[in-house]
Length: 560
Ligand code: ATP
Ligand code: MG
Image: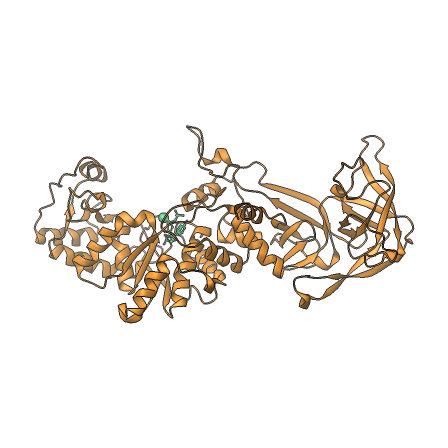
């Protein structure tokens, strides 16, 4: 499918480079997550792009943990990231690298820049550096320490590394141009002093490299050919190039693309972490989270996410993608692969008066009309059934064709039934039971006399059904842009109070007994559902992945 699509501008660049024999025709890309959270659907776009480019060109893609910052790294994040990348694509994430493995090499490069007179040790504090840097309208001023001799700089750098100075006392800075219109070039900091242990290097280092200094070196050391990043790094490219040129080392090409934004969704790990920390969600893999682990728990498949990424494409202009498009992708995929079953979320008891007590029978039901190979299964029928409370109305409005007093409907795969009386709770007036009759001649769902009914309902047999909990999800945020808030508020003000509804007393057909966590089903007429890990064999818990209503298909229809 993806092969029929026009190439985006990055694929075009890479194809051109390969045919021109640049880098000997090699393609090496990388996906370089920082260790400060779980991966989200935006990262999936980058993963699909980078691993996809390598795959399409017989190249390699590295999973590189950008672990240059000692204070935020966590082993838990490493595990989750590896797991998510592998889940998204087979063979992806097999080449695993750590930026911290290059610390010694980076230090040697820093010494080389000092020797060339292109880097110096500064004594200014972080506040002073930022004050000296100037701003958009004012050029920066040189630090009083900018013209230290090479010998003095070498000595101070060695002593920084040896731990002679406290945090923040000194920095190593590149000597570029304090008046540059690009503020990234105003003598950026390369190393800062942080006396903290690192998850891999322990206490070997007390100076840590800054992102802009480290990133190009990591790419160069790994001989990455195309270093693909999001648009906010466009202004950093001159610095990326400056470092590699100044060192005269292998020089990858940085290319920027627009990051993915999704309506009703936040896409920053820092903000997602806030949601977790403040308990707005039930952890990183809460099925309402846009994280890959959340989407997986919700029932999303890797195929659907990859197809979504292929469809949204790669562009150079920022935009917001309608979350309905993501839902459309999973609906299409599950329509093909999910087995159909019957489940009643809000049960209303139905007694079939002319069906013998003690009797039951098994009816044939189709597992997946989209996939004949999926076969059929048996569904038990008996005198007492449950149907969906919503499928009955005492005073049916005009367009309501489902069950009502005196009306006949089809029970899917079973019989025609007709409602003959209604039992109510005398105190509340609530309907507690329907009394029906069935027509034995309609077994399987058709009437030999050609009689028509206007509705087909799903149902379960009361005696055979399994109790279940079903969790219905809606958007986590009530506004398309969660950041659209009044002054003094933050995105927490836009949390949707109805994003999770737990329906505790559902009844599902007995074939779902023991269904494995992660398995996915279509509940007929209701939507797609995935077995949650909170399930037990006797009491499954289901997450609603998505309803059957396709809002994206409607949007597309309107647009065409
Ligand atoms: P966040 O703001 O969520 O923390 P980040 O860019 O800081 O994102 P990194 O871990 O540094 O996160 O990202 C790893 C890679 O994923 C980078 O190459 C980055 O450009 C890419 N990436 C991150 N977010 C998106 C997004 N929304 N769309 C596309 N690519 C993304
Ligand atoms: Mg980041």
